[in-house]
Image (cartoon, rainbow, N blue to C red; front, side, top):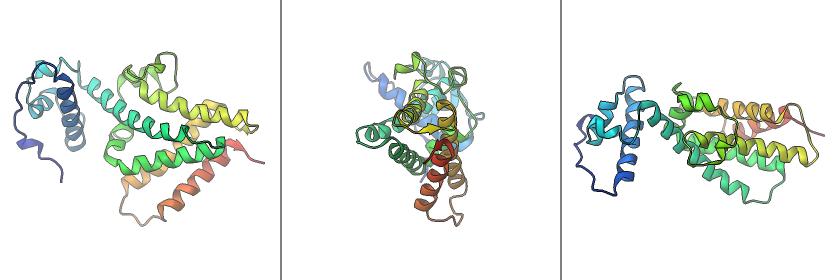
Length: 223
């Protein structure tokens, strides 16, 4: 059952050294409010009320609502990158790695539909991500830089396509475009299921395998 934010009790002031806990509380409250009431309708004051701090105190952690949204996006991408860490440890041929990573991405999204929707489907892309873009640069190598986690994730996908090229396969598109196209395929499947969870789709494992077939054959020149 969703937490009743309207009756949330006012918290007490955190002792020195507990600031990281307060920051997490702000993010949890903001996520629930964004999902329930919408990003535009949610105010800093409302988030502060739920957490149990004053609005000026909340500004010590985040300069504005956009910064909160950016931190929430980073949380999602960091969790996704942790999933991808496991894929990198496996000894796989590049094309099989692409398929395994694609499957892991879809399953992550479907296991965390609310978190995924807020990050990818709510239409509230933070300004820092709009400015930085999704392609990695030297700044993106710092995993603690705000807004970097998404670029790190996309850089990993681009890296797989470089591995595919180095293994002797040709791509139908430049590496960055191939990565974008595959992501769009995966995201399209995820969005359809998240937006219509009760629709009588074909079995998910069949849909996932079929989408990966389409995506891989669309960007890799297969023998």
